[in-house]
Length: 223
Image (spheres, rainbow, N blue to C red):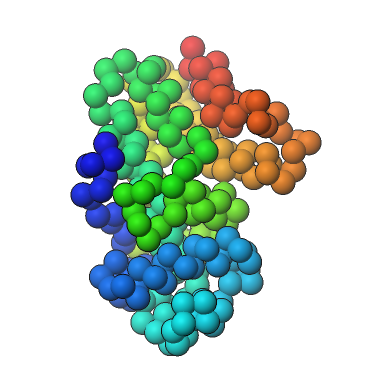
């Protein structure tokens, strides 16, 4: 799978950026270092001026790639979910048994992420930390309906609906497949956050992973 992933280009909606950052060394550097900086200081404190200082480039050069920092965060989110979709597809394509396929899919979208060495300029482990902490800021905005119409969240919704299809294979009679899967995917981000910061209100910890919780949930709901 790693060989295949290394030959694939992650696709992101072209309306999200002004210029595709994947097309130049500066663009890749903007993406790479924005991940480190957002992780370091948080999205609320993140600015293009600070990013420019970090990469040794004018603030104006960043605006040639992204209209604003919200669009940059949406880009990072879209990239993450597109990468996650590739992993999901390749890991489940040859699995015949629906229950085994669902377990694999849930594991992929809920497990702790490690860096993918096939993508040199993006550290997925750190990007995952940003998704855990900041993903809701990409959708919980006044512009969400318009951005949804423009396809900003298409990849994320596609990941959800791929797993919905597997749930329906496991139990065609279950009436809440979409709600279940969106709860698992978004809920896992929240559980990872609680495990890191608010440990007393989650059962997930070093001994019980977020993945174990959601595998148990799905098994009991769908049986």
